[in-house]
Amino acid sequence: MSSQRYAAIRLYKELHRLGRDYPNPKYEFHRKLRSMYEKNSHLTDPHEIEQKLALGEYIKRETLSLISLAKYREMKRRYG
Amino acid sequence: MFPTARNLLRASSRVDINVLVPIKRCIDYAVKIRVNPDGKGVDTTVKHSMNPFDEIAVEEAIQLRDTKNKGLVESITALTIGPQKATDTLRTALAMGADKAIHVQVGDQHNVEPLQVAKTIKHFIDRDKYELVLMGKQAIDGDENATGQMLAGLLDCGQATFASELKLADGKATVTREIDGGLETVEGNLPMIVTTDLRLNEPRFASLPNIMKAKKKPIETIKEADLPVDLTNRLETIKVAEPAQRSGGQKVDSVDEVVSKIKEQGLI
Image (cartoon, rainbow over all chains, first blue to last red; front, side, top):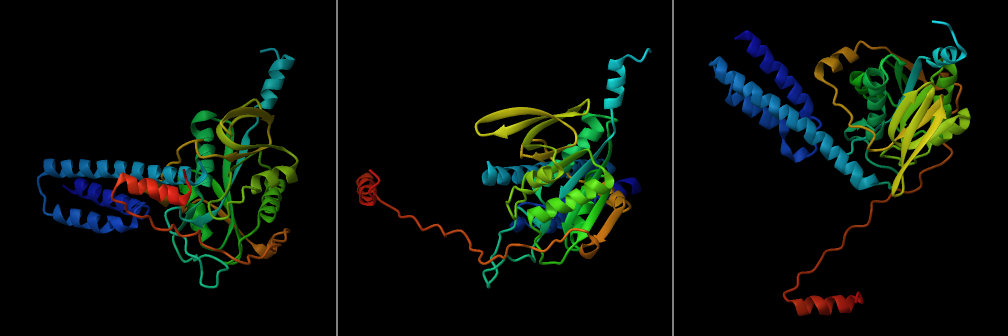
């Protein structure tokens, strides 16, 4: 379904943008992101794709809070 | 309604507030700082981002406009003094929700000092009239914690530093400040300078559509030479040194050994 295709691309762009600010540079966020997308690129079942998109949204939310938390902790460590 | 004196006062005190948010482009908090071989500066070819305290200031301005004091804030302007690349930092502020931005362009290696920064901010306040200046308490690179205070001095207006809560009402600002071991609440008339502490809010992350929209928002670029303020530094950096390395520990096998080692060090 093409709407799911666009949703997946949009999610990829957002995750890619978030990956730039991932607190630990050794984590290779972008490489992992790409390999996960490649692994699921053959999926055709709309229901299954929906599940993967939901997982992606979940990762996006978790990464966002991870970034804010890492920043807050570092600031708190430095300035109290 | 009959215009009693009290109503008139209330109507006149409901002014539209223009917020100015001065921000700084700093080396990103997650980057390990490396001192240059000449020992007079740090490696600046690394990732930069907006100073985290300034992010908090931008977020607070947006919250004042969108939720806390709906209809009271007329505009939010971000201001930065920095090299050409500082435009990215302004775009981040615009993507978070600021309305417009001003960029004072200076040379790549020019670290402008707090007094000159404060004078520049004053120049724009005199030119455009802002009722509230929200800024980070300090930048994570220079750690000077001075610009806000100097600006309040130059403008001869109130200042509330280390803000952990901010309320606007009837032309007054009520600020809760973080002080040693507690909180202090102060109130003052606008215009006022508020510098933000860590716990004021949680800054948002600009979403991709907003980043795209921010590319269309206006940025006014001004060259250092066109500014009526002299930005020449008065201080020269003589030496930058890394913090002392941690000396390694020792492994011991038994409790007795621990005790003897501690005694050796003269700790008990």
